[in-house]
Length: 310
Image 1 (tube, rainbow, N blue to C red):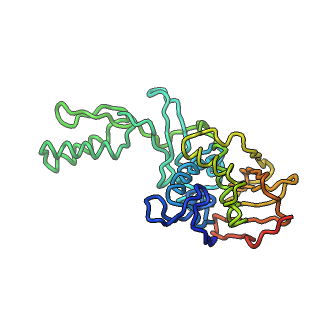
Image 2: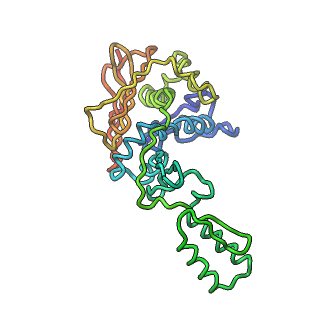
Image 3: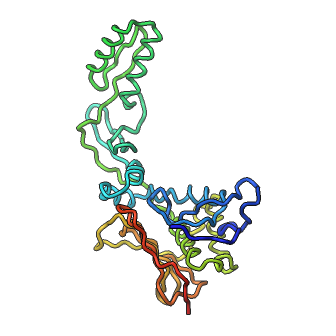
């Protein structure tokens, strides 16, 4: 869903866009990151800010809770979204012969592959290709190459294999049929990510008011963070909520609403992860404004009309 934008200033750095300078081009600013299934966007960010905000918001995909939820929802999610997030999950196995092994899901099919890329844990197809390449480089006949590859295929995992005299490789360990456990050691998304999402949605709701000086503090936090200040958003009032009684779902939501007499934006990811971001400099709306995105069907629902505040 596109929100039209007429002002030529970026809503983060407030510089003029489309000036011909590199980095000032107008780009699509997705409110919820597109990589997690977001579709609400507006052309209100310059290229520089959009790129840096995108890198920051990409941390949402690696959040330990987001990964855990996605593992439950994989059949309902578009593969580009589900498998991309799932590939960031960490798994481990304590093997009697080889010690602790770590693995991650592949992005193409979700199957596990070892992630510690040493001699024992390279991909089997890569090692096999190396064997073929070295045999060809040694001018070995095709029928002998075929026989040598069959010998390689029959080798045991972890076994050393002689390609030609003086050239050896080790057959990689196979994870097929092996049970791995989750590491659950992924990071927690930093507070600035829900703040950034909330700010972009707020702009969709209040339009040109977003440029007013009272929002300078929000912009300063965002600019400091994308500039490298990791804890710039730590003092912003954000309620980190979890909804244990609500089942996870392939649904994202946003709402501009009044809570405790303050204007807030509620950010909901997969219906279960919720952040309530406070904007005390703004009068609360008299009517709740919302946006929902259903990832399984692609449907969107919103009432992003004129906002009335007291």
